[in-house]
Image 1 (tube, rainbow, N blue to C red):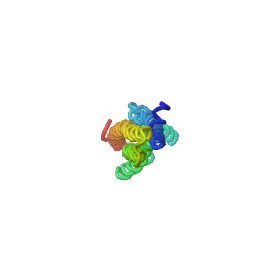
Image 2 (cartoon, rainbow, N blue to C red; image 1 turned 45 degrees about the vertical axis):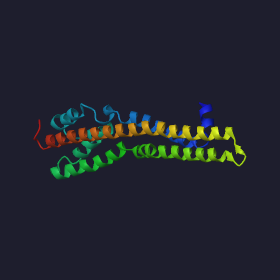
Image 3 (cartoon, rainbow, N blue to C red; image 1 turned 45 degrees about the horizontal axis):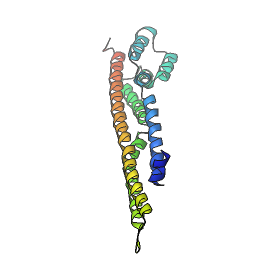
Image 4 (cartoon, helix red, strand yellow; image 1 turned 180 degrees about the vertical axis):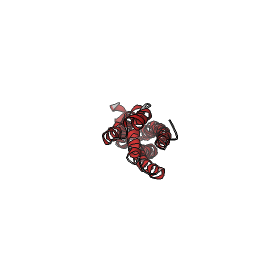
Length: 201
C-alpha cells in the first residue's frame, strides 16, 4: 500500500483524506438509519393504547418523544390532542421537517465527495502529465522521471474512480432509504391522526 501511495505522489493524499471521511459517513449512516430505532413497528399500537385506555398523559408523551424519531412525530400530535385536525397535522409536518433534516445528516458531504473525487483524480493526472513532460529535455529524456509521471497520472485517475463509485452508490442507497423511512412515518402519522379523530379503531 505504501508503495502505491509513494508511486501516486502527493496528489493522492486529498483522495485518501476524502475516502476516510466517506467511509466514516457510510458507517455512521448505516448505524443511524436503522429502521427499528427510527420507525419501530409496534409504536402505533402503543400510541393507540395510550389514547384509548390509559389516556393522553404528559409523562407518556415525553416517554414517547424520547423513544424514536417516529415517537417524536407521535408526541407532537398528542401534544395537540384536543386541537383541530389542521393544527395536529401542522405540528406533525413541522416535526417531520426537522426529522427529515436529521436523517439527511452528512449526506451532502458524501454526495460532494462522490462528485469531487474524480476531479481530484483528474488533478493528480494533470500533475503526473506535467512531471512526465518535464522529463523531456534538449539532450533527451529522463526515463525515471517519465515513468514516475505516468504512475502519478494513472494511480490518481484510478484513485478518483475508486473513491467516487462507492461514495455515489452509498449516497443513492441512503437517499432511497431515507425516502422509504419518511413515507413510512407519514403513513403512520396519518393513521394516528385518524385514531385521534375517531375514524380508525
